[in-house]
Image (cartoon, rainbow, N blue to C red; front, side):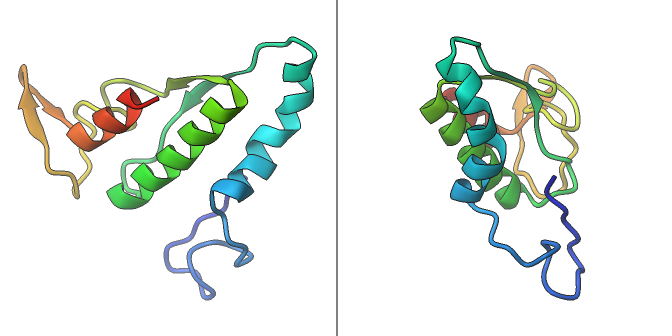
Length: 116
């Protein structure tokens, strides 16, 4: 698991190892590829980011995950559509929301998800 402490003494990531798209591939995609090669479907059942995580960090992380899963041929589902992990009414403090039928829409996250 990724350990994140914004105020950590050596930066936000415990251990200081760069955790980028390739790191995510090695840690969370590669272990499942053998099953996929054997014909087992792989689905990331729920994913998302805590709504106190900076929005730009969340979007970059989501992009890396989604790109990896697309490359691997994995399915995925967002943790929730409306609520703290979703594109509607997430209550993130650093998002410029659009009004959408009485809800607060995170357009950037929506457009990212639509690309995948």
